[in-house]
Every structure is written in C-alpha cells, then in structure tokens.
Amino acid sequence: MKFFPGCMIHNRYPGIEKALYYVFEKLGIEISPLEGSSCCPAPSITRSVSSELWEELAQRNLKLADGETVITACNGCFTTLLEVSEKFGAGDVRHVAEFFYAEIGAEELKKYVEKRLPLKLAIHYGCHFFRPSKHKRFTSPERPKMLDELVEVFGAESVDYRYKFMCCGGGGGVRAGATEVSHDLLRKKMDGIAEAEVDAIAVICPLCMNQFDNGQKELRELGGEDYGIPVIHYVQLLAIAMGMDVEDTGLERHAIVSHSFIEKLVK
Amino acid sequence: MNEEYLRKLNTCIQCGTCIGSCFSGKVTALNTRKILMEYIAKGKPVKEDDTIWFCVTCYACQERCPRGIPLTDILIEARKELVREKGLPGRLKNAFGFLAEYSALVPARDEHAKLREELGLPLYHSQFVDGARKEVVEIVRKHLGGVVR
Image (cartoon, rainbow over all chains, first blue to last red):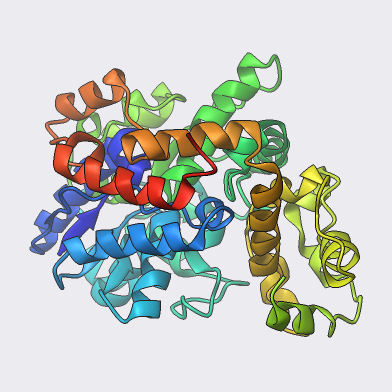
C-alpha cells in the first residue's frame, strides 16, 4: 500500500503520518510513502477554478501508486483521489478511518490495544468524509456511527454535542479565502464542544485539524474566546493506544497543547 | 451555465431545504437558493455576489434536495464562471500562487521541514523532489496561465 500525505499532513501535521506508520506496522500491513506526490489537489477550491487541473494532477498522483492501494488520512485528498479514480477507472483509494472500520474491524482492532484511553471525545467527521455520498457508500451521511464506534476500540467515549455534524468552517476555500466567515463558523462549533466538557476533539482530516487547532489560537489572538481544547487525529489516538510514545505523535507540536490531556494519554 | 444544470435548476420547487441545511448561511448572508435561482437559472451570471465564496462545500444542500439538484456542483461551476470574468479573490490568489510555485496549495516553510526531520520523516512531497515539482508546476501553469502569474 502507498500512503498519500497531501500538503496538510506532509507540511503541517507530520505526526499523523508517523502515527499511521506505527499502526500499520503493528497490524502487519506494509505501507510506504507515495514519493513525488503533490497537492491532491484540494477538491472544491481547485474545481472552483479549473476541473481540468483538478483531474490532471489527481491522475498524476494516482499513476505514481502503480496499481497499489492508496491510503489517505485526509478528507479532501480522499474526495479528490476517490472521485478521479472512479471517473477514469484507475486506482484503489481508501481513507484510513473507513479502511480500519471495514477491512480490519473494531473487534479485531481491540486485540492490538495495549493501553486503554478512557477519554471523553468530541468527534468531528468532516463534511468530505461522507459527502458527496454517491462516491462514498460506506456510511450514512446523515447519521454516521463509524467514528463513534472506532474510538470505543480503546475505551474512549464519543460525547454528543451541539452542532456535532456542522462543518468546521475550513472547507471550500473558506478558511483561506474568507477567514472571518471561517472564524464565525468555528466559534459556533467550538461553543457546542466547550459545553460538552470533553478532553479533546478527535478528527480524521488534517484540514479540519488545522481549522480547530490554529483556528482556536487565532480566535484567542483576535481577543476572543480562549477555548484551549486540544485536537487529535484518530490515527494518533489509535497509535498511542497501541503503545506509541505520545512524544512521537507530534501532539506537543500542535498549536493548542493541553498538559492535562497529555498526562491522561501518557498514564 | 451548461444545459443539463439549467434544466435541473428549473425543477426547483422553492422548498428552502437547501438554505435550511446551509451551515454557512447561518452565520453569513450566503443564500444558496437566491444565488442559484435568481442569478443562474434566470440567466443572470453571478458578478458581484461575494457570498458565493462563503460556501464551505459541505454538500448538505445537494444531498438533501428533494429534486436531486446538484446544488453544490452548480455553485462550484458558477464560481468558475466568476473567476473567468473577475479573477480569483485576493487570498485565494495566494493559495494558487503557491500551487504554481511549490506544487502545494499549502507549502512547507523551513520550520515545517524541520519538524519532519525531528520526527524522522523524509521530505518526499513533490515540493521537495525537483523533477516531480517541475512536472506538477508545468501542469498547473498550463491550466492556470491566465489566473495566476
């Protein structure tokens, strides 16, 4: 299998990649980086300018895998590579979360857990994980349960919260192009998460992660709310539960670092 | 706007499910239905309405539309027409500038490359592989010649 990092994991949150290799090694599945791969490119923003560019870059990335399954840990990369691979009948593309759920299974994953993590988590799926759903038939876009079940693998609890299925505000070029709007959406989402009194926000997309992580920092710097709620990718949580040192997951290099959360993970 | 999209838009029953489902519309003036019906189905291209860039493309409206109108896809198509006429909005121009230079919409700076190094991870994104970067940049420039320098 080939790991496709995309810009956000390769260039912003490499700890996710490190954790992913750890988990795959534990599971005994061979995976190596897709060398020379570029920006996927991001689905909505690129198609807002040129569909031809979107397709050609995605096809180039798919071709690099030379027939091997491509694993992504980003919802945007997943959407782009999956849709283009379907359109041209080239390549097998999986998102690591649905791969774990469908191919390994929650019960099987439990066998690899060395350390239980009895955390309260606010789960955020991210819009492009299950939509557009005609390409993603693995879960319901209205009432997905997959990630809620996946965190139970290591004894964590998925806490229900207001706006659970709302967008983080990062997608569609809004974070880059209309930052104020993106902040307004984030604030709404964060208010719901703060009410639920969780240990952390668990995501499966590095763009959502960046929006929650750096976005919280930006809200604070703008003189607004200081939520201070750490954000972690599911793969990082799973790796820690499988015995990876917290330090190696890059968690302490995120914008929002919570020492009480790290203590709970180390314990 | 292409014929198929126009035909579908004209099957709209004005039920409002799209704006009722719109997250961005809750915090901004984005009115998906207005943009799509007023401007597009009635043949008035979107020229001045910046709210079209407030759509996070979550696809909730498209998935819930009882007439199966591909609203998000059409909105993205409308953005494309807008870009052809007015160019990219300022901050998005930067992002595509990065793509045309570094082969990444989100390029690494030194600090990011250093973090990878500290974690013991190689630099293999096309941004760091000369031949690959050149190849990608050529593709980007071929398609975006008029949009980014």
